[in-house]
Image 1 (cartoon, rainbow, N blue to C red):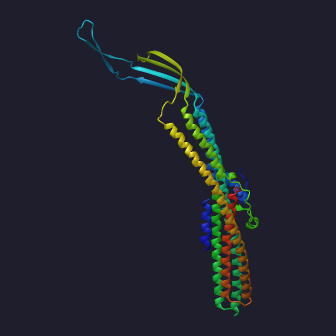
Image 2: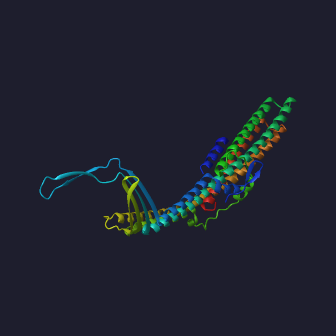
Image 3: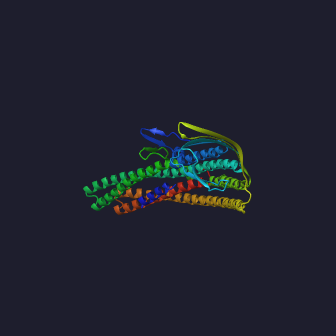
Length: 445
């Protein structure tokens, strides 16, 4: 049961400015805050989000460059291996028979070079395109913030699991030492005739069970640290140490009182992203509207050509051209009007999504607060239950060593204590998990 519980929790964790960590030998030591800050810049998702911003910034320049001078050059060399013959019919004025002549137009060799310079003078979509690309950068930056929040959540959850796995290992090792000592004492009593063999065998079963739990706890600690390193972006082969203590981290969470009355959904990163998308949609509407306006370009063209039948003796000619080009939409049968209306409908749809997001964030906060309060109450009950079960087990163990209790009763009480430990583990993780989700819901993670 315990193995299934912790494995499921660790798999759940997987689904979710650089800081200098302290170095201890070959290990890196992290507090919870240091681990989250480290992952903010070094986790795989954070790096991908940074690359998205860099790509978006390059796209801005791509649009800006459209409005700057464009220079192109082109050259071509031709060897006409077989020049096509053309037929010319000549009819004399005296009415005699027409003459048919075959002749070739063209030379065997020719080459040309052409240069062109163009400059955009007016295009309503140009400035809007630059603005849209900058909005895209803003969206990428906000997406990075959202990614970093998700990364911090995953790291916090993985850090908690690792700390609890570490504490479990210490607890189960202590249980093993107690059971081994009790077995040693019981076996000594048995050798002297004061205990039955059944008591010794019962204690051996308890010791074997404790050893298995220690081995399982060691495996779970190794797995939980691997999950944490993956979430942080640390190499799986890099040893790490957890500097924080689970009891110190739990203390403020135990006494935490949710206060979300002043929460403004518009400060939430998800809502902020939609606001930026709203700006982008307004730009798209304007972009479709300015398609009615003309586009004006200036251009200059120069061309140089050489031709002849002897490659060493060729004639040449050249030309230059300077001008303006104008493109003006006249009639499109309502096509552009339909495109404008489509974007306006998309804008209305986005506004509806923003209202949905606003209500969704309020509902999410209400659920997060309720879940945390329930988890907090369950945790306090399970904490008290674990302490009571330990006292019962400890008293039974003392009575057993004095011959006042049976080994069967001791085994039953130990099983009850272990079960209460497992319940306490689950409620502890649930408390920490719901606290993290609540912090995320109020945009304070």
